[in-house]
Length: 237
Length: 237
DNA sequence: CGATGCAGGATTGTATACATGCCTGTCCTA
DNA sequence: TAGGACAGGCATGTATACAATCCTGCATCG
Image (tube, rainbow over all chains, first blue to last red; front, side, top):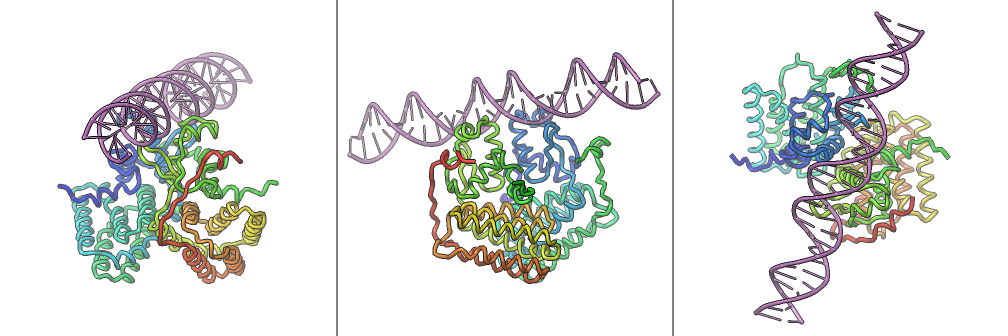
């Protein structure tokens, strides 16, 4: 199978750098919506699941907390983060500042191999959707954005984008309104064509529009994210 | 003295949220160039200095590692980060994407109180320079940029900027060429005026130019790292 | 019957102990 | 004398033990 690392590595651009680490596996589960926002992450439980002591679990939770995927509450424990409406807007505002111009840079640098890799990425995304695995499709869809930063050869921005994409996954879990269809892959394909053409200006515009569409597909009016339990809903700060 | 938190809090926008924490104190020392890039940060030594066990020291080092202020090398230990030339360019590229447009937003939102606070900030910066404390002046200078993001009311971007500013401090420690004068405060003052006028376009341009000047004042051709003792730099505070 | 206070259990916070791998200095050899 | 192998010390990696805090259920009281 092989697959030359790139996608696999980039999945771990953050989250410990490996999918075999505690942080990486947790991040993957969150990213694919297999754990819902607000879920309590008990140290002993995770330790048992992953077969390590609380020491390593705590280190992983701290890392994920720094990436804003997990919220640490003193003497209460760790929980999968529940981004507020405000945070949701801020995340997409930040993406809007970073990604379009990064896409422009990527267009100027993309090689044939890069384009082919992106195409395979989109294919995988389709395959996941057809296979009825929307979680995996969502994760791949996010990784597409990270790939763009990789092609732009900007590691620092890539890390920021990776974090923002991960947080966007949580935001989608909370605020996605299902009545909008999955236009995702269309947007990615159009962006890919701009990159293949080396048309930076168009790539920038496509990315900007794509992000706008993403925000538009969210329902950011009701300030009440669905909480796991009544307790969680009431004593939240 | 009091000083109403704002600047003090923002200093801890990252780094644990408090200057009394291990991470906060370490970050401050790094930020003020009291510890040089490359310095070994031994766990036992730090534990003794701060009066805590290695457990807490490790947590702090992990956090600073996430903020790219510290480099963790497996089985080798922690070191103050030494940003490469490439990383230096990337950091300022990221700042260039984030800060100018954030300054524009800030101009649209700045209140009289905000302007007054920024003015006090600049005054403090001057005072530190006059008092012959360039480390403190540099830290305040960086916090000015964070303040702009605070006024723009963008917490997510603020955190990114805070991290980039901290990394910039390391970059300056490594690549600053002293032959350029301190034009800093001039630039900040000009930016302040644009913000006070509510002139977003001008604020954006000023910030862009200011960042360009900053990069121009660096010598990004040859890598050259120094190093020094540790306890001496940390005993104060 | 509902509210309040208390106690026990459970979970997190911190420190310490043990295991593992690196670094250095010495000794041996060519 | 230069080079390399080895052993010991030392720093880090991980797990476990103890302390502090919080949550839950029950008993008691109004």
